[in-house]
Amino acid sequence: VAQGGQPPVPPPLPATPPPLKPKAKPPAAAADALPDLPPLGLPALKAATPARDPTLLQSEAAQALVADLHRKRFSLGLFIAVLLVIALAGVGGTLAYFGPNTVASWFITTETTSVGPSKRDLADEKLVAGKKAYLAGEEAEKAKKADDAKARYGEAIGLFEAALKIDPSYGQVHRNLGIAFAKTNQHARAVEHYELYLKKVRDAADRPAVSKIIDDYRKAKDKKKGK
Image (cartoon, rainbow, N blue to C red; front, side, top):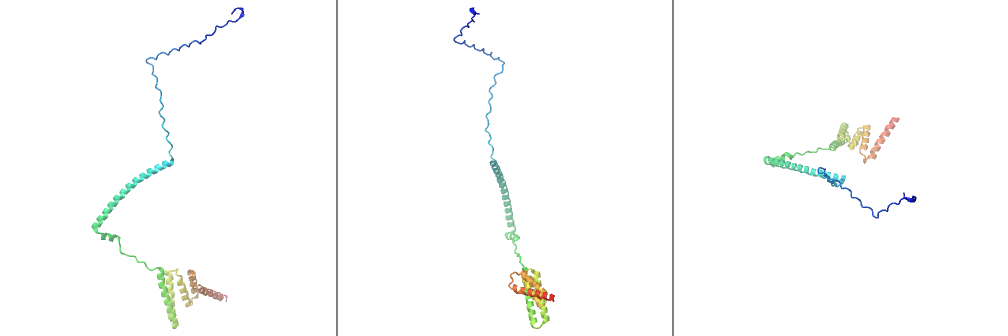
């Protein structure tokens, strides 16, 4: 402590800092020390594979399918061509051996199928014959030959019925049967066939007259029942 109770004054700082002492160098590596490892180089990154468009994938699949189909078609076409060649060779050999006329006769026939008469044609034959029989009955009736007339009317009815058996849809035959039954006093059966005639022949020209005959018969029948 300084005299007089004053604290001591520190020495002045140097104008420049003292130079830093160099660090000690590490000792040299021993001869048996491991060498430094070379720096690890990262492999180059591969470019990311872009996502395939499903449409393109389908297109490529379709193209592959078409290519495969073309190959199969080619194989099939070649197979068919070979078959054709074999077939033509066989046909040529057959023609040469048997002759063209003989071979043609195997496939060409001169038989013709004839088309028979229709049901309506056959029914018409019976209808015409029945009309002739009916007219013959009228002639016999005029000649006062009752038995002959009855036989001819009966023949006409049989022919008309035969026509209906051949062609049940033939409405005109019902008209002729109605007339023939009326002629032989079989009025109920006559009216029955008149009704069938109008039912099957919608555009009958004599519909009013035939309808009147039917109505008159029913009225007379009802009147008779009333008595």
